[in-house]
Image 1: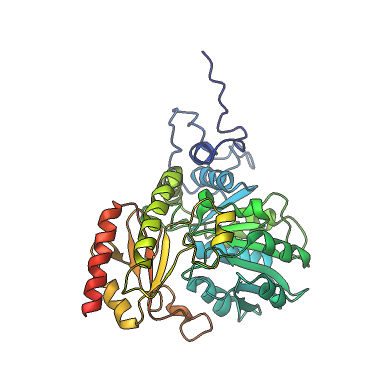
Image 2 (image 1 turned 60 degrees about the horizontal axis):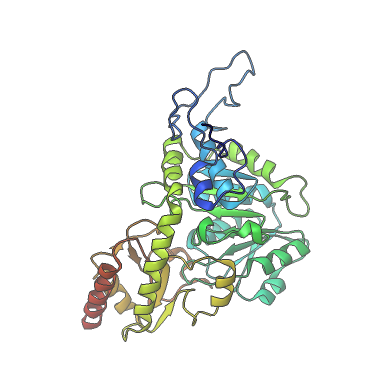
Length: 405
């Protein structure tokens, strides 16, 4: 009896998401038949004569088989032409910006961008001669007004944003970017490729902190870029975007190590089933918080009260596991963050365990005093995959303790 199912080295583009995540780029090991790609913990490779490379491998900064497997799987998951794995999400961002911007260029960013992204653009690339404008990306007209034709080379999108969970219409912004020869870059960390496919909506490149949902277990730091098929460098620069990213990845060298790549690849395999549980738990918690007297407002795209709900419902297949809410005062927000037991007070997000944090003093401290400063009474939840009854009871108890403090 023969098995006519497609092999991992064939085209997996017509397979379902989980099938692609589990098989793309992950052919069983030719020598042993191992069904999981090995960890090639190696720096260099024997050459069969000068320039006689086996499989194209010469030095692990340039390429490593474990990282190659992850990069192929990420590209398949996002529906892109090529994937690139990095040592962190910010390393991925830095590489992309170096590949696409030159002194004197301009970039449009969200007015509630992730603090690390803002710090990189404003305080690292700013002195290098890159200017930025922060706008509400949910207002497509404001984005269009912020574009400086000839100078704007990148429109940087987070949707949902971090931490205010704003929603941007990817297809509309892709049209704005194309009209001026700029790139549309979408940070898809919060949504993940399971819930949202930015490249199919017109984006040129997707960014991930794979530390978060793709890794999924709070045990690895990494980042990724996935480039759309046919994407070109912005106006003023010539050539395919994929070639520029590959050159800068190798030249800068901030690549994912083989063990980190292996852990991330392991996490990607279960992304779909985890995201289903993250979404279900978050929806229940958002409803609970929306009806609680100690909460002044709840920000979750799955609620009809969210201004971006209709756009999110159109371009996402689920609303994710991130919730932000306000308590009315900084003191109550801090008290709440210190009163949970199941929710762990910690930065980061996207792991199987639930986390709680105070963005104003933690993840977004770098934007304090700027136009991107977040409210001091804001609390952000990364809802994990624990039993939802335990999560609800923990929040009920913590809210009561914070109110009494």
